[in-house]
Length: 325
Image 1: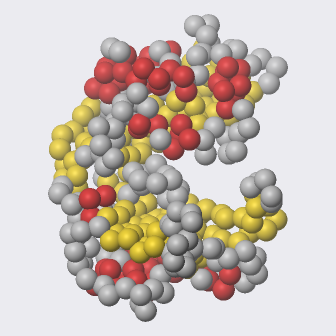
Image 2 (image 1 turned 30 degrees about the vertical axis):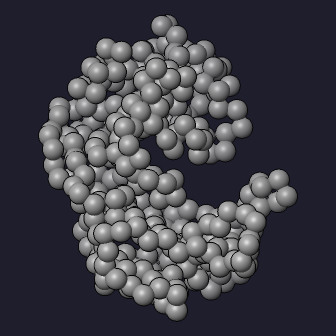
């Protein structure tokens, strides 16, 4: 996914327009999305102070990473980083393979050199079952998460392009849910993705995992935006385009959408993510967890059409704030 999509909460309002389709004033906007299941109000959440992981959770994470011979597990409020093994005087940057950061409520592991073997990767059903077991070992209750999607890792050619016929890893993302609403992510995009992600390779070897689990509290509830308010955001260039997979020229797609004669919105899905839509984060670890919406739509150009996905604010107050800028 393109960088702007993964980091939309970090974009300043003054630059948000750069990533939003500038539909013509003549573009007809039609709503066909079912809305009966949309909540009438949505909660804003706040992070509580740093989240120390218990000795039991750390012990299980160490075992899951097969690092028991290197780490003595203990509960701590301090950050912990285990670097990759290298000889003394190694000239390059040494990456960390196991991290515990109470401030971001994250515990993660990444195999230094994930395998390239494409054989014996277990079936998806087995991997999902294993992910649920591993999540429980790290203190996640089944009712707190929902299976969201799977990710794939491929071997790459000399230009770092995926060789899609050489699958060497499969990941499972169990998204945290707040009030029945999931977090917007597949689990591989950095912070702001509360939940549990784990990747398996050949023979079911654990190649990496990440648990992001801050303690949260409800802060305030806000009215859900009306369809007319979201339409106003589209007209005001405040809805961000999501690139299609490895879209080679996302800005060309943005420019082309200005020619659409009609935009038919077929689905609206609320999600949560850390930070505030369209604003610069005021710290590396945003204190606010806010909802927004993903819109699925069909852009009709007259002689052809294309499916697009847009990100939009979903609370009435957020719409008003963005339109006032």
